[in-house]
Length: 273
Image 1 (tube, one colour):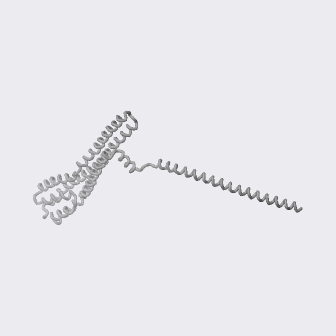
Image 2 (cartoon, rainbow, N blue to C red):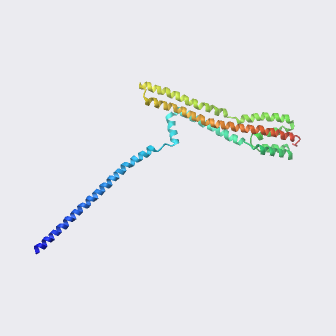
Image 3 (cartoon, rainbow, N blue to C red):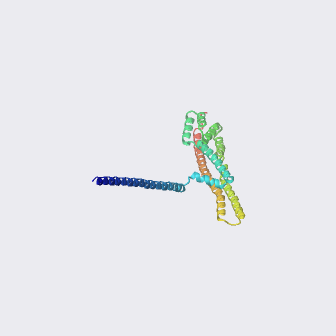
């Protein structure tokens, strides 16, 4: 009986020990498999991340500023900088003319009403003071006419015509330089293109073979100068036409207001000084 109890006790202990060992072995194995799985997933994610980043970098388009800068560098500084200088000088003159013409614009109807009222109520001196304090070529023409008021209407008319021609030439000042830059920009571009083509043919001659890479690369660089030259000419041409239309508007206002001004002087020819 004692032997049976001892046997059962030893068997139970052995069974419990083996079960514990098996469970202990199974748990590390499971943990090892989980760790291995996690590690593999992490490696896969890490490997995939750079690929996704590269794809995003390849797909992301370049901005207009970056493309313009890249093409400018590819065109060569020797030919691109003169074209850029032409653009800067041309835009500087355009801005100066726009400011001058905007300051030269006058509300002629309002000015004529003030001059007529001053002539009727206070005389020529008051009208001259109004013209003197008003900016623009129209007010300057009126001032010249009022300054010759005592010499007769014929002298006033001649004075207005003469001084009007002077003011028109001032309005058109620097337009000749802008037109020069409009013509010069594509000419510089064409010159850079011709020189670039000559260099491309020299490279073909040195290589001894008409390689598509050599031909395409040289032609692309050569044509970039023409592209930039035409762009500069187009920009300056648009502003040039705007300035011409602005000048035409001011000149038409000068002519119309001068006719009305002469009518006012005829009506108030006996106005006091």
